[in-house]
Length: 104
Image 1 (cartoon, rainbow, N blue to C red):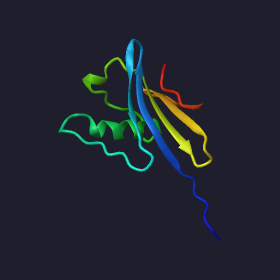
Image 2 (image 1 turned 90 degrees about the horizontal axis):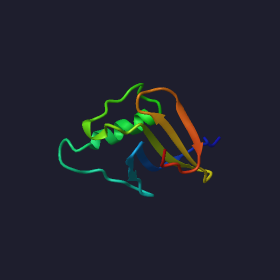
Image 3 (image 1 turned 120 degrees about the horizontal axis):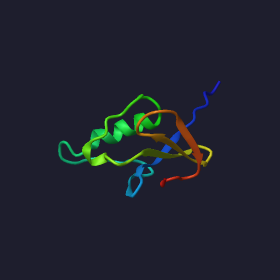
Image 4 (image 1 turned 30 degrees about the horizontal axis):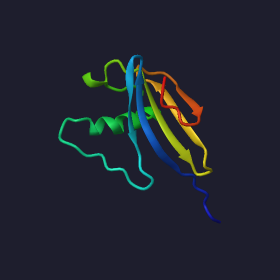
């Protein structure tokens, strides 16, 4: 018997806040490499993904992130639908929105 698997393809990671421009990372179709000097936020990207999926109950916000209120994690399902998970950076439940939401 063949095991059925579902895949999610990350599209973007966006943090939004009132009176601030959205900060977005776009994920490529096959591979996205996150690189940079030490202490520039690479690990924070992965922390935000874990947090958006609900794998962490809280997240530390660096000084550069002050004023941002929500994290949006957009992904495509293997059936072609686009879904965005939205979570307040102060905690709480995860909202699910159909489509690609990148703004407040």
